[in-house]
Length: 250
Image (tube, rainbow, N blue to C red; front, top):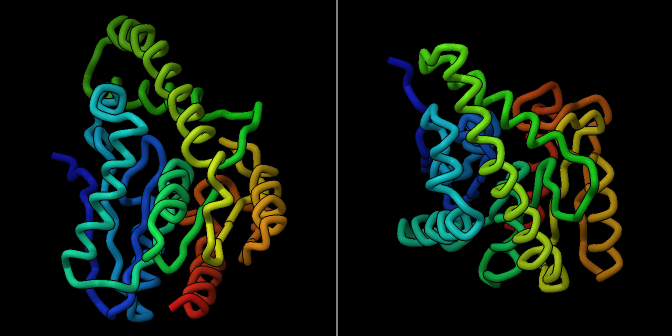
């Protein structure tokens, strides 16, 4: 039986970092970064978004929603505080970055954080819908469905997937993008130049907008890296950049 990814909490030093994973991803997205930070005496919590990492794409659509994932994020922050930590930062990969940013807009007691490959600003370019359908096809095949059943499942899944992705875009615009002026702490942005899922130029646009508000931005462009910079060839550089940033906020 394949072991499913689960939330993890690496308790180490007094400074805590929350890491949020990507859409249709899991805590495996951020485990390498978590271990690198733990080695430098940070305590790391990585929750798992509702509906994710079950092996069934329908669970993301039926159990998950932007509002539910925002609740998951708030619960993660509460969990870390209940463990006695007061010095907390929050980062997110892709979808996770949307909720990390929302948390930083709404929670004045967080020390900082930021985003990795995250579509905070709008863009016409996204390969996320195709990625989700491809991943779903793989999962349906793993479930042992016949080819006909796989096709029927994908046909049924497509409109529900499109509706959820549209809801994420709307949520981001209304709840996150519209309130970027509420960010007050230094903000980290990491982006791969060869991002295959979202428009990489969103990162520099976000940097420019935040800097125009007078916010300190720690911006990192990994020219040859794809979307998942927490695990691809950029991960060592990213880990170093995050650690350097963390030393400025704690």
